[in-house]
Length: 443
Ligand SMILES: *[C@@H]1O[C@H](CO)[C@@H](O)[C@H](O)[C@H]1NC(C)=O
Ligand SMILES: *[C@@H]1O[C@H](CO)[C@@H](O)[C@H](O)[C@H]1NC(C)=O
Ligand SMILES: *[C@@H]1O[C@H](CO)[C@@H](O)[C@H](O)[C@H]1NC(C)=O
Ligand SMILES: *[C@@H]1O[C@H](CO)[C@@H](O)[C@H](O)[C@H]1NC(C)=O
Ligand SMILES: [Ca+2]
Image 1 (tube, protein in one colour):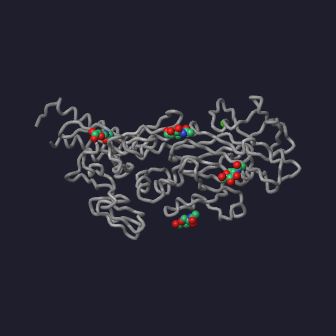
Image 2 (cartoon, protein in one colour):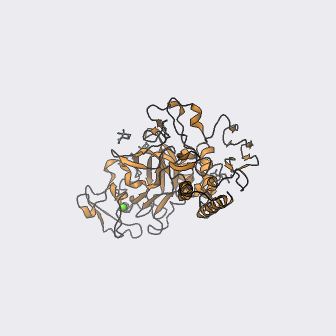
């Protein structure tokens, strides 16, 4: 049956637009216009800002304050050649100064710039330095933290984090050339972790052993390897990671922070022993601190911007606040919830309606804890009538799949419409377009 082309155009265009938007990337957009029988309407999605290089926004504080070299001017030796002591640090000369901001600058023309401390001249008293990094904003790590040390990596160091703007701190990872000796902990690698203990705080010896100061300069906090436990080695299955973020207690919080702190407790030694007659070769020097992360906006914002010197979420879904963790005036405070990554691929925005509307409206598409099959310690919240087996896995009814039975099985049978078949890859976009044209042809 021939259709009026102009009336057919708009829904097709909107469907195409939606397919393209859904293909762009997960949780990138907060809303889009979709076609319905009643004409185009807004559809809302769970959304989050893109990862950014957070070193550009961080405030650095070094303690004790007089630990930075150059006041008075001093000379340094190198670990590889302790009799080559030609390096000079002088805070009053721009070319010879090594202030803390050189840990976060953009280096140009391959010229390495670095912060440097005084030497360990008061040995055997340890050379202790704290570096606090703050953002005044909740952030979520999206890739490895990488700290680049010139002149050797510390032999003892602790990375701490705070979730409450520096009021309380907790260790994030311990680093030592001998974990047992330094912290009484068995050495572990992130590769030793599995889904059940991915949030464990470990001590690693991987970044503290002496390999020459030029060979390996970086110390990492491994985020990718931890993601890979759920998403696969190439992070090809992010859906599974996001599903776990929703279902595993503490997993999202593990990657969340407002402040970080490096506690440097012993510099590189260039071998096993401290050479007491030449202490001018022991010090810390950091050229760069990379923190790839995104603003935590509780899945209610697709953008985060600098306002009044602080990063703030550009909140949608009638939420407000620095992290979109409150309701806009006139919206029910009780009905606020973070957005959910589920069901994949778009999640649920858990948008707020005005006070007059029924509270049920805010729950559409979200995990309803009351209705969900809650396990003993709530490790897995199976959905859509899935049953939880020994807290390990959900057994899904025939028409659902996924770790939490969160995804409808769509096999081209009745009730499986073109739009819901839009998934993430270009391939599925093509399939989606094909499905739509077939639907159109059969109509
Ligand atoms: C570093 O921070 C720790 C923990 O707050 C504190 O005990 C220590 O005194 C600090 N060290 C320096 C050198 O400021
Ligand atoms: C931190 O952010 C809050 C909220 O944007 C703001 O009110 C406060 O002034 C900021 N504090 C600092 C020290 O920048
Ligand atoms: C984590 O669990 C795995 C097995 O599930 C175990 O082999 C590994 O040693 C554990 N890692 C830590 C740090 O406890
Ligand atoms: C915000 O609330 C208004 C009034 O209830 C509603 O019309 C609108 O759709 C809501 N916006 C979002 C993004 O949820
Ligand atoms: Ca630098």
